[in-house]
Length: 212
Image 1 (cartoon, rainbow, N blue to C red):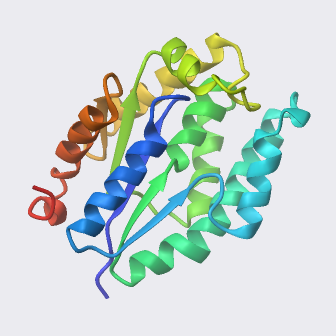
Image 2 (image 1 turned 120 degrees about the vertical axis):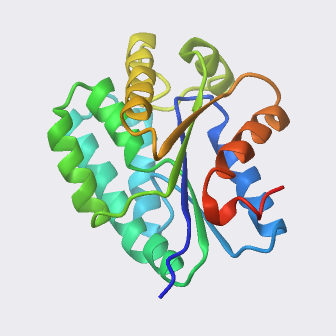
């Protein structure tokens, strides 16, 4: 059985990663690929319910370990019910956030032990790893200004220092896993960022001839 291609889009708040995930999924479809587009947390009824808990300001002060386990529960359901079947059928999957977000937010941001976060990430995904992860990088202050124009969710409302730690986490992940993770600038118009994303995607051999 031929496994499909798994691409994840990561970044801090307001970097435009959700827009870029949608644009990339559209470009791959236009190129003739069968694409499943998902987001984290979410993507299944149970995972979407968990998303509501995680982002609701009513749960400010949620214990960091409880937060971590909720993300992993959402991820486990999405991975087993949606991502793995789509990959097994040979299709492409574009995921808006995956386990690198947990490492960055709950590991670097919250200060939970990185080895324990990593173990839970592997458990929740049954060891599944993306073929390519694109981190869209932007100064956290600029990103938050973009993201919170109509009000902040529970994570967006965290202090700037938290978001700076998260950004540092993403950049450290990229430095440690250069074979999988590519950092692109989130500055500029969405079309400009999309070109950088497409250039990164072309580094995946199976996609090199698909996206021109």
